[in-house]
Length: 403
Image 1 (cartoon, rainbow, N blue to C red):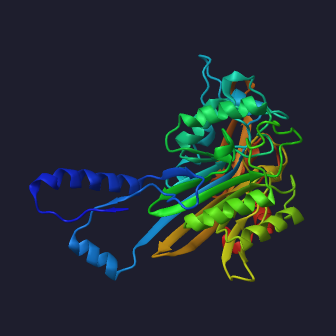
Image 2: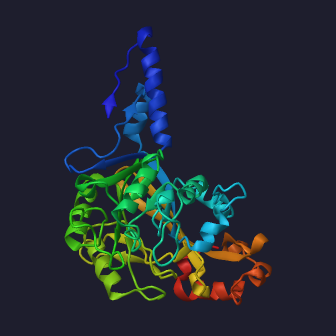
Image 3: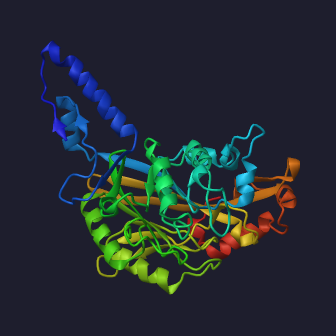
């Protein structure tokens, strides 16, 4: 941070004013850096312009900052979801998929989505299960809804091979202030940490997947996807811990369609805790799994873990696959101390039924906004408000549920 000395000469007023504008801009927006050298500063350099009274006030009082973060589960784009965005003129528009939930996403300082399917775009055929390829317009709609962090290391990352990853990287390269995690253009990116600064708090963001559905990584590009490997995870988190205020890990892990936390998840949870991680937000099982505070026995450090947020949007058919969660966290910085002052889960429901031309129409609702009238029109019967409420209460501890 560069200090600007007070000077009464009129000729410096303009530069000081410009510097102040830069400072305000940096405070409002998230600043992103990827850094592979743990001895170098990891956040964008701030320019601070203060007068003597302001300096004295900062010396006398602890400066406080606060960031709100939301995260949702799998953006799982099946064939019917692709068709839902087809317009009469041949274009694709998916803004309606996220319209109901957009107000919740937009008001957060940081919004995270698990991009389960590769955004390979029109370079490949648009496909659903089992080998997915999604239109770039899906990403456009999610960004329009307010998402700025995309977790791209999933078990479907290799569905279109290395060429698919290249196209996804190309897509995100043109999106200012949007971050794609878990995939890499080269080995240097693989060995780098993504830092994201918001409201004077520096976050380290890490995303890994347990595997790629048996599709091998290219022999000459083993760095293209971040895999859950203990040596890799340990090295990354140690570096991140030295340079960031808050370390967040987004693991793609767990047993599909199981509400129970697996031994594999527990093993990595212990590793994350031992390494000093602050927040863990998991995806992959397609259903909700518990939320809990984990206290490290050796250090006493507390970590919040969302084992699985379930699906965000999909055309899966089991009722518990249609009920996901939106993590809502508040992170505060008091001087050098970080506090997670709030950690909640807002239950959500993926709703779909047939509309005009027999095409499916999809929406995402907060459970608190869902009604039995809507449930009666869902293509999958039985998903009443009572059913989903009981499901959430069975899986998520009461202290974390926010309706």
